[in-house]
Image (cartoon, rainbow, N blue to C red):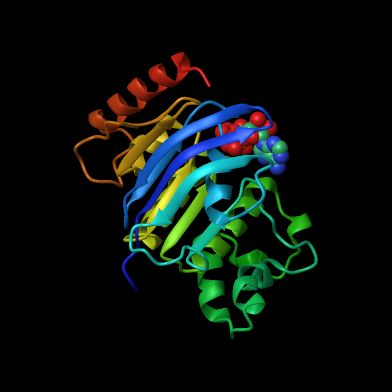
Length: 241
Ligand SMILES: Nc1ncnc2c1ncn2[C@@H]1O[C@H](COP(=O)(O)OP(=O)(O)OP(=O)(O)O)[C@@H](O)[C@H]1O
């Protein structure tokens, strides 16, 4: 795999007449950055901006990969809604990226990924026959299967029960090792466990929060993980959008 670049973004995003956020983001290459902040502050908008998708507003500023090459085509994206195509089987949804690019897809590898997210027995079902958590795991499998240098995950574990969530965090950390990951989450415990960098976003600024000294992926019950989680939660409860 080629080295995963970092991303910088600096500027102001306006929605109609008001400033939604003023951001100065430095996302390090090859690491996990967890982005937190109050609902509606613009976390998903940051992802959509960098992806070149519609945001409903206007951005004045710039963003770029730190290696100077275009970002287009190097990012895989898992949105909050699973975006599974209802007329395709789960397995065909996993392979959709290759199919859209006109490339052959490695069905065995796709099946192996489905196995890893616990959906091997559901490969030929349509998304509508799955539970919300199963659909989210199918979307995660599709994103991991894309094998890109940069990965954007927007609340990817939000529909999962606690045990499955911990399992999927570990799977994603393993598969995406060395990738540049930008994870939007509302869960301080998730950030404390997974992040190399924690960034808290408000309307006025983006600021980095101290991560534990230990290396990610951290033990859920390690004292430094719990301390980071508690301090972050306390801060977020007091933070305004
Ligand atoms: N396509 C759009 N058109 C107009 N406004 C939009 C559009 N997408 C998002 N917004 C608005 O931009 C603001 C930020 O939305 P965004 O989804 O980025 O927030 P968020 O921090 O990710 O929220 P949450 O944590 O609830 O997912 C909200 O006020 C939202 O209504």
